[in-house]
Image (tube, rainbow, N blue to C red):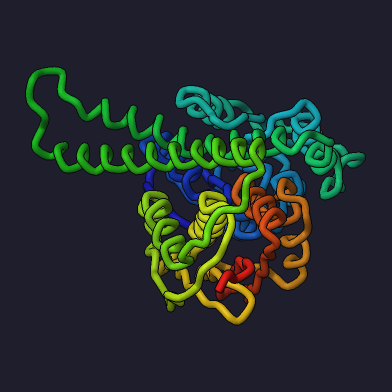
Length: 382
């Protein structure tokens, strides 16, 4: 939980992606007191304690999804304004949200003025919100999940994931650019106090732009490899793959203020396969770990081990971990169902696809409240 200001109405921003919370905070913090939550359970605790004046609630989150969160909020209060946020807009989803008592519904990326206007509208209007429709109260397995399961082509699904993953950094770029422009003087000279602030914002713009380029490159490499199906080159030094993957993910780690650490690296490990694709698989495991790492002392450690038959890339975060009951859901072959805590977006989609073409496997080990370790295991060359 992060409180940014102490004046004005209190807004609770609920999203498992901290870059989205950062964007909303940048847009709204000058007018409102901002509190953040990364999941439904944390949000409910904050609502009981802080009594916010409005909630923005992401629909797609692990553990409990936003629709289930909305139902639980409405059990506490029928008139608390709740604005639902999603990057996967659909008529069915919007209808479910409104039937459950949502005050409004916005799609990512939310425009600067659109978000401010929606918040202002619901804070100013009389509180006469409707109660949830009892016929739709049980939504954990409803239309939201059905939407995820609609059959599409492999690259069609990947396109959806790519669009989702690209949305958040583009929003951050938009807000950073707007706020940087506001620092520029109307005359010829920049105010001394704004020089360092502007320099920091421009550095962050550079990092986010680098990350957008990285996502685009991932998509292009996936599509190209899908067309060519060439996986026979090598052998490659596994240690060099680790170094390259760390270089690629450093911009994102800096954005998220996460420290990337190198553990033990077996320098003699060699493996065959498509170098770019293996590198991408490791990049996306590191990216997921950065996303999941703890808000206190954020660290992600990457190690390399091998035995007589395989090379093992090991990525460990110090996040909240995955409850044992959810670990099986995380490993099932459905990379787009985040409503049950399953794999996220393009990252694990690429990992799963590359492993199938290289005869490898992915193992996850997690301790709730401590963190998660992902092991990417590929056949050893020599």
